[in-house]
Length: 343
Ligand SMILES: [Zn+2]
Ligand SMILES: [Zn+2]
Ligand SMILES: [Zn+2]
Image (cartoon, rainbow, N blue to C red; front, side, top):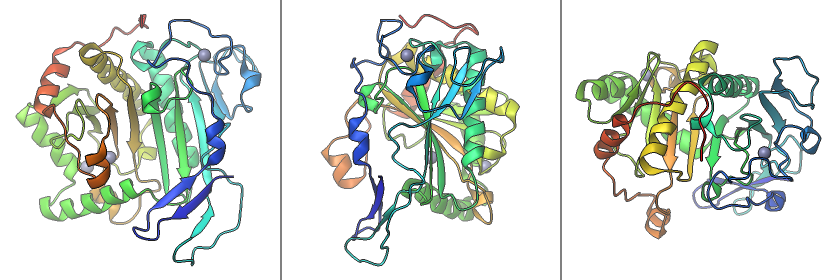
C-alpha cells in the first residue's frame, strides 16, 4: 500500500509505492514500437478484460462497458501510487512522519490505436482525449483534494511503462511542492506586476513575437523566458482561470487540438524524443490564489539527462535559448486534421 513520508529536513513529502516496481517494462527504448498490435498489450482493443473495470469510456456505438467499440477509455491504475486504502499515520514524529498516500490514480487510454500518440491522432480524436481528461479532472476536483494533475509520459526515458499511448490523472490529498511554489510565486508576481503574471506573459510575448510557438483562438504556446530544458513549451489559455475545471467543454476539446499541434511541431523539429506534459491547476480555486494563479500546460522534452548539478542545486542548465527554440518550432506548419502514420 502506498505511503507518504515526510522529509524531516525540508518537510517535503515522498510517496513510497513499492507495488509500482511490478509494473510492466516497455519493450522498446523509443516511444512507439513498429509492431501494430503486440500480443500482450492490455490497452489494445479486445483486451478490455486485462485492465481493472473501466470507470468511463466514449462509446459512440453504445457498446457495453469493458467490451470493444470505445474511442477513449479510462481505467483505475493497476499499480496505484495513490489510493483510498487507509493505513496508520503518525504526523507528529519529527524524524519519521508518515501517513497513507490517499488519492486516486487513473489511466486514460488515448485511442484503441497502439501506434499513434497525440500528434498522429486525428483532430477529432485529440478533442475526445482532452474532453475526457477534463471530465476526469473535474471528477476528482472535490473539496479536500490538494492537487489534481493530468500527466502524460512519452517514451521509456520519460517514465512510460507501457507503449500504448495513455495519459494519467493523479489526485492527492497533499498539495504538490511544485504547485505550491507556483502559487506563492504567482501571488508575489501579482503584487509586483499588478496583474496575473500569466495574463501579462501572453500580452508581452504576443507583442514581442520572439518566444511564440503557436497561437489559437483560446490558447497561446510559448517557449518560456526561463526555459529549464531545450524546447520546453507552455500552453497558456487566454481566458484567466486558476482552475482547469472551469474550462468549457468546447475549450477543453480545442486544447486537445492545440496540444497536438505543438507536439507535432516538436516532432518535426527534434524527432521522437521522450517527453512529459502535465497540467498545473488549482483545484476548487478559491480566495486570493484565484486572481494570481492561471492554469497552464507544460511540455518538457528530455533531450538531455537531468544531471548531478540539477539534482544538487535545483538549477537547470539549458543549452538551447527559448528564442531559438520558438523560431524553429513556429516555422513548422501544424498537422493535417486526419490521423497520420507515425512511421
Ligand atoms: Zn496496445
Ligand atoms: Zn491570468
Ligand atoms: Zn507550471
